[in-house]
Length: 73
Image 1 (cartoon, rainbow, N blue to C red):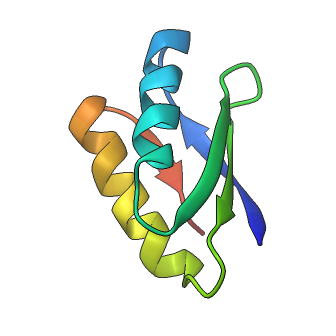
Image 2: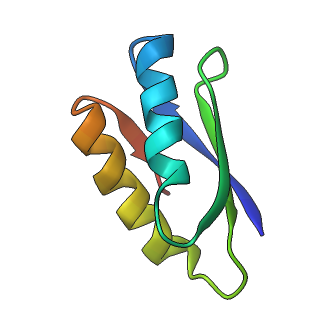
């Protein structure tokens, strides 16, 4: 399953850090961040709960870029 989320990030380098952090998160099969559109697309592993996984993705992204935001609603 793939879902797209609106994000808030200040620069392209920060967006790359977010993408890398998301890809390393358990339950994420693949992730892509588009800085120009301020969107993150996440493909979840089979059977993963998107809400639970995205909580971990946000936490991991905040570790590498503390002022980033992922709008989960």
